[in-house]
Each structure stands twice: as C-alpha cells, then as structure tokens.
Length: 59
Image (cartoon, rainbow, N blue to C red; front, top):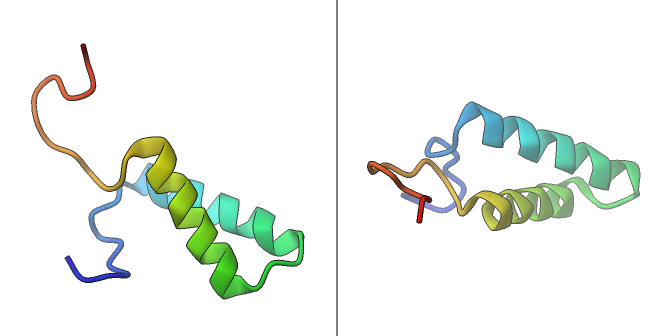
C-alpha cells in the first residue's frame, strides 16, 4: 500500500481522523500538519487500517 492511501481504513477511522483534524485546525495548526497528526492519532489508538483474522485483539 503506497503512502497516503486511506482505502485500508474503516469508515469509523476516517470519521475519527476528520474530527481530530478539524480540532487541530481550530487551534491554528496548518491543514497539512493537522491531517498528519490526525492520522497518526488514529493509527496509535486503533493500530492502523482494517485488520483481519478471527479473534484478533482478544487475549
């Protein structure tokens, strides 16, 4: 997957990133930096794009 390709993310993750990005922009962060930070935050909280596999995330 090339950098910048968001097709591997769920709709929920995309909505979260958009909301986070708007928050950064409201605080005066440039749009490019706001988008970068938003996706970094989504990756940190969810572990990245869609993950497949039975029982993933359960111990």
